[in-house]
Image (cartoon, rainbow, N blue to C red; front, side, top):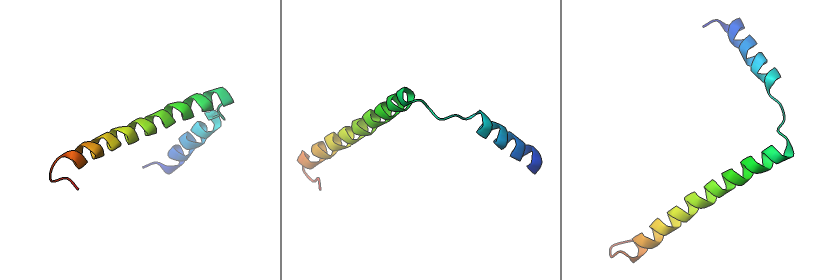
Length: 57
């Protein structure tokens, strides 16, 4: 492992990184939020099905 080379590549990546615009941030957060809601809804549906099956929790 060549540490100086690794550190320079990390620094190069940090220099290229930039703060996202408000439009980009809102799109990413909306998509992530919809994904979280979808996974929660699927979990709730599975829970509801398992509740109505005999022997469920």
